[in-house]
Length: 385
Image 1 (cartoon, rainbow, N blue to C red):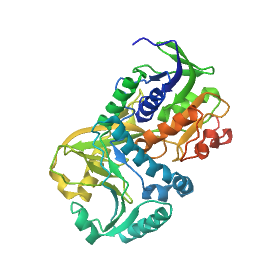
Image 2: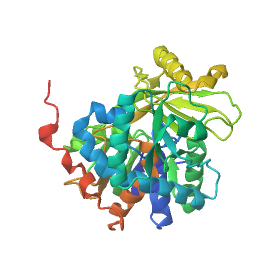
Image 3: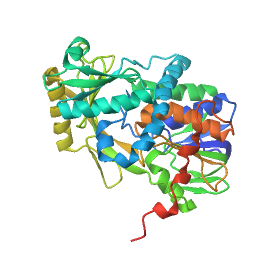
Image 4: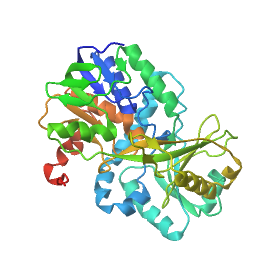
C-alpha cells in the first residue's frame, strides 16, 4: 500500500496497544493510519499472553522505592482484565481468554509470610486475593511439585493466546476503516506533525506513540526525556499435553511464569534475560533456555517428560513500572501510550485511555494525570558523557 500524504491521526507502533488504539479511533470515525517497523504487526512478542494483576513479589523486594507507584496502578490491572473480556466479546473471535486465576508460589516460610503481607495490602486496595497453604493447593493445583509450600491466589488473573488476539484486533481495525502500514518505520517526528519514514513523509493532525521501548528515542530530539529501556527476555513453549496447568503460575522469589494454552502447549517464561544483537534484535541465550526450563520442572515436575518445540526472545519495556499516558507536555497533538509493568495485560485499556485523551474526553473511571510523562524532568535525565 502506498504511503498516504496526510491523515487525521497517526498511530506509531503495531503491538497490542497500537492495534487497539487504531481500532478504537476507526470506530470513532477518525481517519487513522497505523505505522509499524516490522512485517508481523505483533509488537515485540515478548509477552505470551499472561494476564497479570497482583504485584510481583520479586519486584517489590528489588525496588521498594517504586512500590507506591505500583500500588497506585493496581486498579488499572483489574480494569485491564475486564477490558480484555469486553474486547473478546466485541471481536467475536476465540482468543482463548481464560480468567481461571493466578498462583504466586512460595517455597519457604519467609517467602510465604512476605506474600501474606502483600496479599493483605492488595486486599485493602481492592484485589480479590487470598493465601493458600499446601493442603489448599493439593485440591486446586495438584500439578505443583513438593517444593511449593503455599501460594497467593488472585482470582482476576488468567491467560489468552496473543497470536490469535493480535490477529483478531488487526482484522477488526481494518474492517472499521483503519489503514495499517507494516514495514514503515518512523525515524523522526517533526512538530507540526510530520512523520519522516524511509518511504517519505506523512503529515498528521495528531500522533499517538505506542512504540514501547522506542518511545524515549523518538521523543529525545523534541527535548522530552522519557526513560524507556528495551529489556530483552526469553520464552519457551513445549509440545502439547493433556490439561495439566489450570492457572497462571508465578514464583514469589524466582523468575518463572507457567501457563497452558487451549491446544495443550505449556508456555514457560518469567523474565529470564535474552540479548540484543548488533541490529538490536532480541536473541536467545543458552543459559536462560536451560535455567528457565530447569526451574519450570522444579515447580511442575511432570513437565520433565515434555519436549521443547520452540524458544524465542522478545523485548519488554521498562521505565519506572508505571504507565506513561496522555499528551506530551509542551507538544500539542502528540500523545503517549506506554503500558507499565505487564504491558500486554494493560494494552487494550491503555489504548482506550490514550484515545480518550486524544479525543479530549475525560475517562469516566480513571484520571490519567498521575501517569503523565511530566513526571520525568530534565533533572532526571542522564548527564552527557
